Length: 178
Image (cartoon, rainbow, N blue to C red):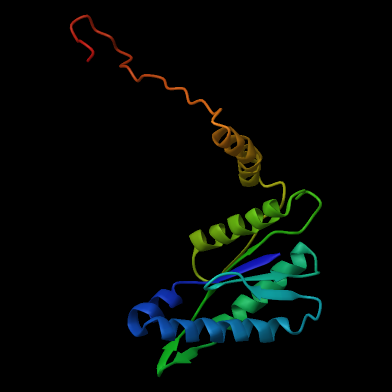
């Protein structure tokens, strides 16, 4: 599974030309991705959010990385003109293989989202692969499994919070605590 997001070119379009120009830019990038992905008849492509797209590729993770890198490299060489202004949009791509390790679909989506976040942190046109055994995902999985327990406790008003007062470690007879 691949998540792709247009980098800050959308903010540039939004600030310089407004929302309509930003929408045109996103629409043109979406059409570009759809044309490139059309070479893979088994691929599933869709828009997730404003400037985020999702792809499910039947290929292996390594092949998906190659496909995403080709997509990113090809878009890197493109310019998109919106109302007589030229933009050079870049894509961040996060990839996570769909494997039985993800016993819940939200874990697979979380993995791809974490990979996309890693790509954003790197910057530029970049592709990041995150495998199911990545240490970053272990804490996230634990937190997701704990969420229903916390939610149930809050709904049933049976959730108890404990507080520990903060006191100085160096207790001097000459100093007093308030």
